[in-house]
Length: 241
Image (cartoon, rainbow, N blue to C red; front, side, top):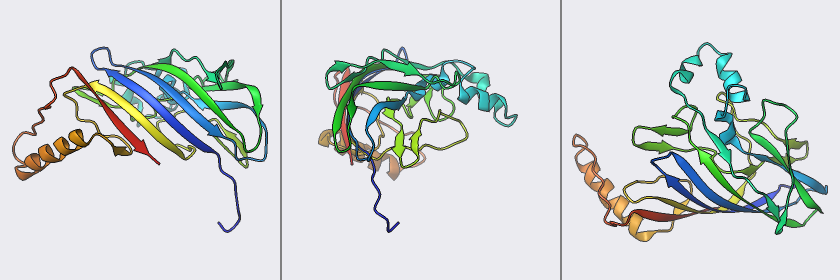
């Protein structure tokens, strides 16, 4: 801990919308990736973890199928995926390459049009569309709720031992670069949203606190939430450092 050690730095800007009827997210993302390592990078591995739900050949499904205590999760599962990716780096189209392991379809190599030297930054952008599965293993939809985890393209960690382009697993944890986030989430106006970071919509936050106080006052009553805004959708702004 006393030894100085470099760490990559990321800045995300994400705009995403939920279509609750079709169970789809539509988004655009820009990541400013600062290379603090002593090495020049020719590519960046990205996690596109919604593809873990795409078919039975993924590392996620293989792990669950090989564990008798977890197979029950698959009885009500449905497929999910991420599509529509079109990476650009500093405004130039970037080629991509799949992982050599055919079970790792939730990882993609983004080739940089120009090498990223130590100390330099690159702006990486892509649109994306996520088809959400029925809820299991941390993500999906159930009844009138959406629980959405690891839904956006994110660079894998690059540290002193190299790249960590690991797949999404049911039994496992995540190793991710620290980052600053600005995220705009558009949802139908009736939804209550909980997300990482600080909500910047003062009116929405005040409404949550007001409704929360009423619901907490009588815990035996049915929870109520009635949006004051009658518009079809609302956009909530979050920041996280």
